Length: 272
Image (cartoon, rainbow, N blue to C red; front, side):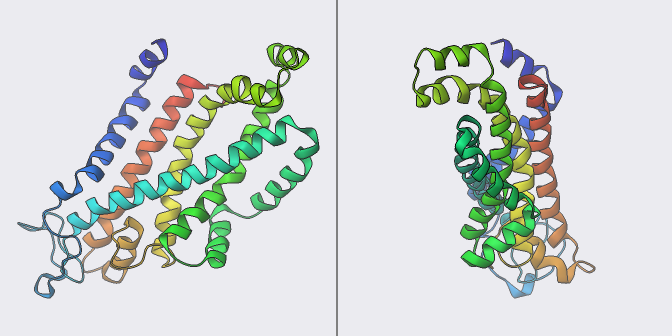
């Protein structure tokens, strides 16, 4: 209850939560909010600015920009969450094992060091080049690009938690490794995982959008935000609304996750 009260009085948490709540509502109720079919083309309405019936204008094929943006929220946000899940599901256990078992620490962390030697975006592009193009492969690639940071973060926490008296007492009492990891160590890592995940979501959204912009993620006519920006880049001088509004959506969503992450860090784990 005290934690909820602290969150309620933290401005960053409140503002970030409101922003993300609105974006989630937009994604859920996209069919009701979209004034037109996001895939419907109309050559007579191509490259029109904001007007009645098309609040944010139309793209080069006469499709409603607003409709494609709200449907894009149904693609960008869920796929970003899936990418985050890939990073957490692989990175957290890797960090737990590396920090808890000395004989696994060196080989696992050396492998993580190799991965972290490459910038996250470059690593994601290399993985996509191996797996093939497509939004699904981009989701996996970005998740794998984020995974080493989780492994490093959790390993450091485990190494410090192992020195705590109650952990040493549990080991001395003959507690199984699985029980110690799941009942004592992992729960103490959860606040840090939550905070870092909110901040990491901002990078993941931008990464997926960037890869789609480069043409190796979502392919036309999928209305992913990065793909929408890419589609409008050739008309940026005459019809800036095609790329401009998706940029605003990405900026607002990323800001929401950053604010929520910063606020939760202050509330849950001020040491980060």
